[in-house]
Structures are given as structure tokens and as C-alpha cells.
Image (cartoon, rainbow, N blue to C red; front, side, top):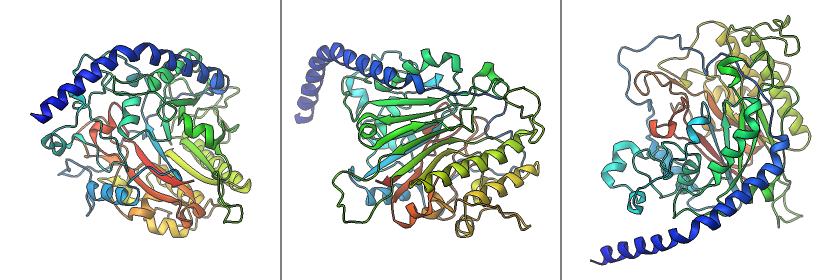
Length: 474
């Protein structure tokens, strides 16, 4: 009886609140969107596209018996989740979370069909429903208790970035890859993304600085290497929570060596407010949102002339150059006094544990690309710990970032994957090609608090990749 009365009171209260919030919140959202546009639209755009997919079509042996889920580890997802919650059971002012997700096109996330569901439809699912696999595995600490009916966002659309952010307790940063927006469509499309990010989901949602976001997008502008899908390919988006960006972010920028919409750099401010000047100096962080080149035999053209490039004529060749340029960008940031956190789709599975049912090895160039990536970004210690493929010959690069692959460093040879193609049975063929790696000193100083992969069909949504996350001390 008591529960019934409480429920009735809640519904009555919500109904009253519903009549009052739309105008005020709409004005607030419109104001924020306009401020965000004025603040960043002039520097939002860079651009490219191509006909490759991520990764390219699989050419590898399939097992006779395929698992229904690619969770081959001795520990379950819930074990990883519990471990993360133990280390970070409550929000911390001294740490932040970066989520990263190759969404394979932003359009599926922009529907705003109004919902006519009752307020009770947003209550926590029953124990039976939760056990059926609707809740994401390896959820980060403090994942919101706000649930939605079986894959439906509270806005009424099948997929919603705001619902994703709310479900994961409003993370400070979300990196997106493969926005798939034409550069000429950016001025019209990006404000719509901002609006979708900051429009309340329902009467229970509120808009404040710790629940609103700004957007910086880097769109492709290479007209010769970005023609597939009508010019809609590539593009990365860096989404930052308003309060976090205001306090901690110094600048968000592109890089001058890429015009395919693949890299966005967030340079953070130096030390936390109130840090003891006599205490140990903590380096500021530079966060890099990356969508690495995918190696294929498709031609790579001179961005100026359109002719096949004489020095690196294929996308395989361009991928190796991209590795060098990204490594040098990281080393340059370290030389300027930053520690580096790189997150995104690197289009490389580092070793046997990162491919299911096996590591793709055909054509052979994929093996060379893998060696190149592992030797340019990771030292001997990390490659050994990750079981990374480094070739049989003495292939040494002139410079190495000596970074740490945080998932492998934290969870060893755990078999977890991020790329799940939208074909065949879930888990029958998958790879870990999305990852986060950090400057070695970030790991050695204990600044990586936890990390996880949200590997369920529900979290994958309309994409062919699942999200992953890392929590880092400021």
C-alpha cells in the first residue's frame, strides 16, 4: 500500500513538473546551442572520405563451432565491472572518464521522435530482464540506474547519444569516430548534433553544466581521398561536458598533417586547482581522438593533384605514414610537457588475443602494418605483455613512443573485442581494433584508474563497433 501511494505521488509530482519545464528548458538548450555554435563552429571542420570499411572484409579461417558470445576469458564481464566499482565507487573530483566509440555514422543518433510512454516505463528493469542480457557488460563505475525499455532511448528514438551519456552517468568526454558528415553539410548538421546532445530526454532529465556538452568536429576535406558514400566518410567528434571543458581544457585543435578527418587533440590545463605548489608536479594531459587509416590496396592519391601518390600509392602505404605522423605528434606533445592519452579506432589488432576466431593474416601486408604499429608505439615490455605481433625479422623503427596499452596492462590476455560486424552470429568473428594507450609515465604514476569494453549488442547499437572507456586521474 505504501509503495502504491509513493508511486502515485511520484507520478503526480512528475506530471506537475512536466507542465512547467519545457519552455524554460527549451530556452536554456537553445541558448547553450547558440553559445556553442558561436564558440566553436568557426573551428569545427576538417574533412575526408573513402570506399574502405573498418576493418576491411575478413579473410580468415572460421571455426566449425562459433561461440554465441566472444567472452573467452576465465573471468566474466561482471568480474571486471565489480573490480572497477571497487576502485571507484563514487564520482571523483580528481579523475575523469573518456569514452570512445566508432559509431559508423551519426544519422542513426539524431532521431527525435517524441515519446508517449508513461513515467513508469523508465523505472529499473526487473531482475529477470537484467539477467537476460539487456544491461551492458563491463559497465564503468557509477553507471546510471536510469533504465530504458529494451533498447529504446527515453526520447523515443531507437538510439540517442544523450541517453548513452546519461546511462553512463554523464562522462566528461566522449570521442566519436566515423561521423560520416559531408564537410559542406557541417554548418547545418553539427548544430543538430548539439541540440540532440543537450535536449532533455524526459521530465526526469535536467539540463545543467554537468549534463550538457559541447562538440568539436574534424571533418574530411580531402576531395581526392574522400569520395565514397557521396563524400560522407571518416570524421571524428570530440564531445566534452560543459563544466569539465570550462575548467580543464585549454584548447581543442586539428593536426596539419591530416586532412581526412582522423585526428582531434585536446590539450588540457596544467595542474588541478589547489594543488600544493611544493608537492610533486603532475604533467597536464593531451588527449588524442584518433580514427587511424585502414590498410587496403585502394589507391592513395595526392591530395592536391588527385594522381596516385608516387611514394605511397596504396592505403597500406598511407597507413604506415599515418603511424609515423601520429607517433611524432605524441612525441612532440611529450616534448612540450604533456603526457599523452590516445583513444579511438586504430584499425589494428595487435596480436593473437585480439582476433577471434584468429588473427587476420591475409593479405600479408596486414602483418607488416601490425609490426609497424607495435614497434612505433610500444616498447619491448608492453609488446611482450600484450602478446603483440612484432615479426620475425629485426624490424626496428628509429623512434618509439613506448606507450602502454591500458587494457592489456590491466587485464592481461583477457579476450575482449570491440569490432563486431553486423553480419552473422554475434561473436562469431570479432577483433579488438579500438583501444586506449597512454604515455608510460601515466601508467607508471598510477593515473590510469580503470578501463573497460562495453561488448554487448545493445551497446553496439547501429554501429559495427562497441564503446570502451578509461578513467584517468587528473
